[in-house]
Image 1 (cartoon, one colour):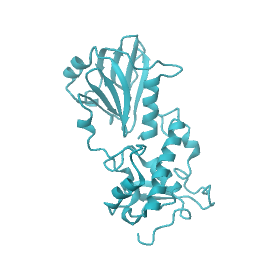
Image 2 (tube, helix red, strand yellow):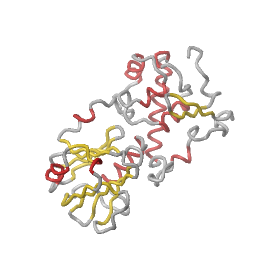
Image 3 (cartoon, one colour):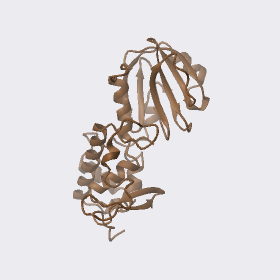
Image 4 (cartoon, one colour):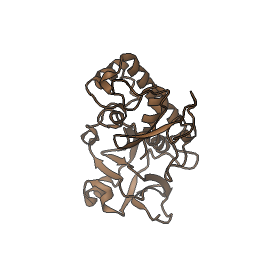
Length: 276
């Protein structure tokens, strides 16, 4: 599943445009084609088409792992889930096998939502907050201070890795960047959140922010057939490096299961906490 850096990369592509495709800003929706009905969560297909036709894209945002395509009256919210991808293509291109939703635009382009596994979802809403109110703060929000993070962590007695993956606690972090940040912060993934000192938490917050910013700079990680443009996978310190030497100390990277998720860490740099 794409995490914050991959979703932010997609956001930037559609907001700013690329060498190959224009920005989505200012494009007007002239037609829709829903190819798999369950892709659209809200509203009904009939209402979706009636409401979105004629609206112009005014901005592209992100909240956690959700893309927010702001229109003149509504917001198109998209969660890519496991295999979703968004393509800017010519309106007369052949329809690909896994295209689920097409939005035709006023300049012979179309926005295509492609999703092989069919887990991705689309919403058209007046107020995206009604859909996203459950999300925790953004890890890159400058208002999230170490003191605030310390207070939030102290409310739980949970293992760090599953807590970081809980989108109601922190929005946007997934398996890759939790492993990488915990290694940079020198914290074992099974450390209990309430046992951390302010110094530990400051180190963890700065590690999360550092890893996410570097991943965004490198356009995310390309580790699935869908995500092709990222480079951060070439700079993993622990993720998917089981049995390989830690770059810091030479100890073999281990893989364990924490909260039902494969978890990579260095047993020397990230020692198991005595208090468990």
